[in-house]
Image (tube, rainbow, N blue to C red):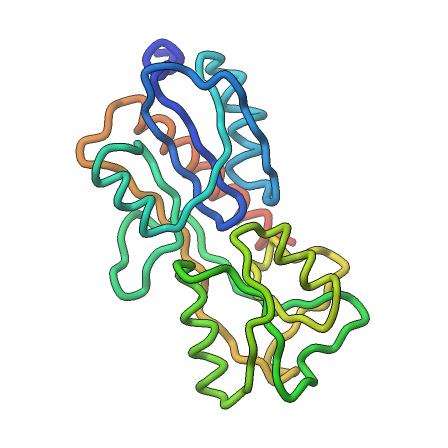
Length: 226
């Protein structure tokens, strides 16, 4: 059965900035597809493989915080959400686990500072409390010098000086320094990405979820092989 015939009202919304991917039902297709690619996980797969097979699907790329996406799925404003799973209230099916890595610009040593300068996502990011709590537990002094909801802004701040950031391992630029316990920085728990579906999802939603599940498994396998 062709998905395109029944998925015309399914409006995918993909976020790479905070590793959230959401799909929303709309009565009309979006006229413009805007691509903000910072990670080659779901977005590249959707654009290169899913959309060509189902040309009636229109793609728009956005981002939002996990807790908001979960609420929108619950309200059936969205069909699928890929979110950072909450530690205290885990929801959804885990489709990927990845290390969180301290990183900085090449030829910089922000970890040697008495007061660590941090560039982080703003309040609402589920990883942020864990980061700050881990530093406090090690009695490391820190100061938040930059906050942005856009990963491009975080990278710009890190590249401009002695600033530390935390990133999923696969998203760290290849020329950046990766830091950890040897540099006196705390190890953080794995980042768990979970797929959230509404109760009794329609067949097109289940098919889209199956496609995403397969793609995340493939990319996880490539990371482990590397």
